[in-house]
Amino acid sequence: MEETVFVSHSFGTIDVMEFSPHSGNVTTTSVLATTDESALQFFNNVVIGAINTPRSVIPENDRTG
Image (cartoon, rainbow, N blue to C red):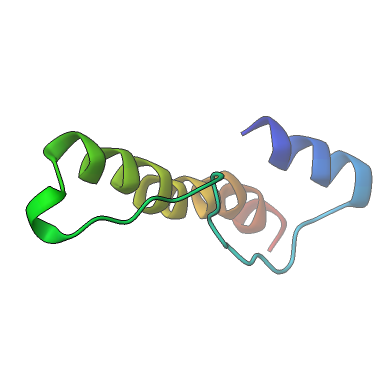
């Protein structure tokens, strides 16, 4: 992730990470109105983001101890 590289170059190592996903306006719907596409969009924004964020930091933390 480019953002992680920028932060580590600007401020040094990343020791603490907090993940709060927010990708603009989040529209909620009832279960009956939820589509596969809307559920997948939410999944990609929140779950995949929660996976990718630490994946971008952990390798450097492992290298530096």
